[in-house]
Image (cartoon, rainbow, N blue to C red; front, side, top):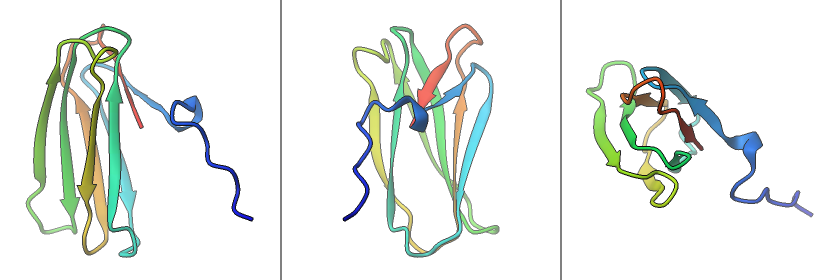
Length: 103
């Protein structure tokens, strides 16, 4: 039997991205076809850049996200990741007082 899935809000999967900082996740396997990005805050504004880097020589695909209240309206997107390796970068461009949770 496969292991039980973790609940959606499991804090073990969540990374805190402080205001003004950058977090990256790299995926070397070409078998990964898509991934889901979920960004939330604790009732504060959410202001972030999301980038998908496909290979070392490609121009990144960029997305700008702004939400007035990241708790009331969390951001979620499924990003296609064809042809590995891929890197996803999330930059919190908000102030240091406005951290966000990335999953």
